Length: 89
Image (cartoon, one colour):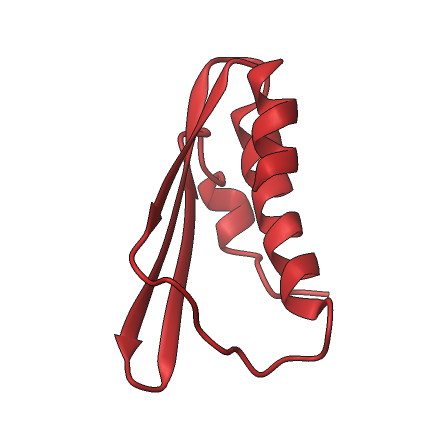
């Protein structure tokens, strides 16, 4: 998140963090979760574009076996014409 925050200040984007757990073990190949999160944060920053915006991140326990990670942005969203085609090759 730090690298996204650093580059986002140049674009007038605020990163809000809500972390409700101190630590959790996530079973995933090394680096895959980090790669996924960086991609999602980069996509959020790009979605906002050049206008001021907010990226909200949240990490919390869903239950004793699951962690919920949410990333949201104030970008314009995906146009309906594209949404209808998501998942197509």
